Image (cartoon, rainbow, N blue to C red):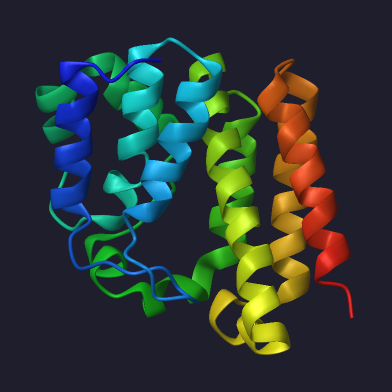
Length: 195
């Protein structure tokens, strides 16, 4: 996929919306994650809306005051629909203070997995690229921080339960090279973090 004017506009908008946000363990600017997701998607698809959704896949979860309607107004209903499919439900308070998200983590992840079982092909592509990059980041964080990485990432067993279930569902539903990449990355993550 080539850089189109809409994709460039989405790059700018994602950068603006995620300004000041950081990744959990390595404290890198958060925008690195949406860029990586979009880069993965651009390697595997020529669907402009999917690449744009990859760039913006976390804005409804992580940007206080930014709504699905805002996203539809800026990038169209199809992009908004893809992003909404891969978005976990957070309150405005949870968007502003991520520490509030811990109390209902399991229920929220279970709901996400149920939704993943019914997501569109486009949403599955975005979810798969998202999981690949998150797992690669987990591997890198673990290599740098060792067991102390779990202090910021959360409970190791729960994290691998979630990624294992997501990998299983995606593998069952998505016949695509990205799904194979996810399986390989999940295996590498489990192997490289076992102590």
